[in-house]
Length: 488
Ligand code: ADP
Image (cartoon, rainbow, N blue to C red; front, side, top):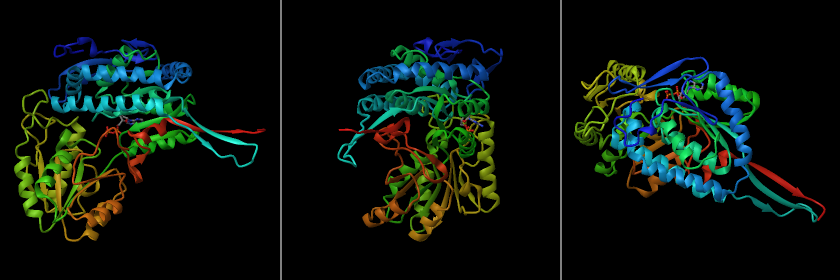
């Protein structure tokens, strides 16, 4: 494993964590490479675990959880607090590992580490506040109590676009309430997850409560999570298609599911918007992480009176973005994750142009390398184009023109997705009307950045089930138990 850029080289490991054991090789003898998408360089070779090893991690988690679940909230909080501190103290190295395996600009990677740590801090605090209820009895001799208990062993499958934060916001609430977690990070980005587990160990987390399984066979791991009845909940962040597969598989054991799936976020700019603020919001919401977030603006709807001014100003800003290796000075846009990602983005642009869209800026691959794409703006976009229907997951902003509020709400809601949405307006009555009419789990009004550990993140429709972060984020990891006391 490459460690030359790290202050603490031990944070990058090429071993997988199965229960209490760090494994350098898998039983099958198979392994796989992790590469830097900016350079193609191999940064680590990791064991490719088999089914028996997944089962072993689940068994270990199952027995460790029995003790962990009985600890007080305060005891569990102390470990999470320490983990937060270690993440913050090692933020530079964690960011370096993240940029190495995923490609995002180093400063953005460091931002992700602090964002991930904020969930750990938040759930450390919440660990002490898993409150129940007392309910007046329904008969004179009865008393009713409601308690919340950990669900038990939680399986987690996480994506490559936020290799640290997507796992941090699952493992933190799980551990806070007394669950154990067996996780499977994306095969492109396992090193950030392993580094998080190393720090959890250093924070004093008892063995076997947090496994990190490295494997290229995600389907096998997903099947074992769903089939093994020691796993009581599955939490997944990724595509809607895989979410659907997991939901079907989980049906046999009525699996509790947390699903953070795809989005197709509308970003609406009304004529009365503050133009500069709207452009700034679009920059953050569209181009952050090279457009590879599930809350990225995917369709930009701009009202006809402000359309040309918005397109011009956005182009000015976007032309200042710098594409390149995430470690290079001043780079704002890194590579896309892999060949499939770049293929999809190119397909979307070609499809739009063939149906009459104009390339106002960018439009093709960038000189920095095979996986880089120029920040792009498309104008004259219509609803029959792929960019209107599918998540592009790249730095491409398609600008649709609209006339009325009713029309744009209808277009914005005409999708099976319902994760994030954004709009810009200064009219207070319109703000309430539109915020309530948008069929989305999250609405940003006059802002392009909505993610925070203190608010509930999640989607409606086919964007998922459950919420992450905030006081609501705890509920997904607990079961409600009602106790009826009679004979009083
Ligand atoms: P993305 O487009 O972000 O790669 P995926 O849904 O394909 O979205 O991947 C998200 C995570 O789901 C990754 O960790 C991947 O390995 C995993 N995954 C992919 N296919 C399956 C599957 N059939 N069952 C379980 N997990 C899967």
